[in-house]
Image (tube, rainbow, N blue to C red; front, top):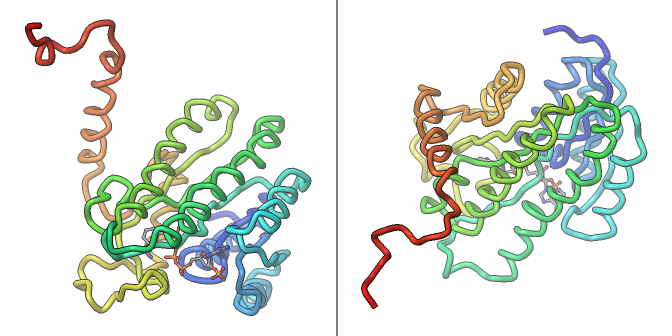
Length: 266
Ligand SMILES: NC(=O)c1ccc[n+]([C@@H]2O[C@H](COP(=O)([O-])OP(=O)(O)OC[C@H]3O[C@@H](n4cnc5c(N)ncnc54)[C@H](OP(=O)(O)O)[C@@H]3O)[C@@H](O)[C@H]2O)c1
């Protein structure tokens, strides 16, 4: 992979796991970086390693994206820094408890980060990308976005939102030369599981991917121009069939008469 200068990538949730790997890989591809998370010490360590390995310019910004003032600070950076060519909307939290066993306040906090912050950051960066007819937005979703029954349903629903938003962004922005991608990993070996109240030890090894492999697959998918990247699915034809079934519904989603099966005699 070439490593000529590519502008700056702003990565949220870069202090650990998938986001930290994106930071490493994108720096090696020639991006300067703005790394965002709450954990300033972890960000500083990651910054040091990357600068040493790649010589790229790496800035860290402490922000709790669930807090409005911090979120506005990151939005301002996205609006005002013309060097930014890529947003990796990666910060996210999960939950493993079933829907009704989980605390609604925690669910709201999760929605604020996984949905509200992600959306506001897209709104902050998209106009500049459109004006420059150049830019990349990567939204970190999850396989649970299409399988919300498997773990906590609100988590799955936040990721379904990310997938839906990505489809819509593609429709509106692709023709303006903006690359859009949603990444749908299955289980990945990161601190996410402990932070979500679960444990990777309870999952069979054969369903857990290394974070390095997940991020490298996601970047390979981006290079291939994929809108939706599913690192685990062996046969992309399975996704294509799923998507084709969705497209088949489109012409009939809105009609003047109910379907015959609902036309009961009055
Ligand atoms: N691991 C998996 O199995 C898996 C599978 C599919 C999708 N994903 C998605 O991948 C993304 C990254 O998760 P990961 O697995 O890499 O987990 P992780 O290692 O726990 O990383 C989560 C990142 O988000 C940041 N973050 C959490 N709350 C934040 C807040 N309020 N404000 C700012 N940053 C915050 C964390 O940093 P600080 O704590 O320092 O703020 C950390 O850098 C998430 O969107 C997750 O939903 C994960």
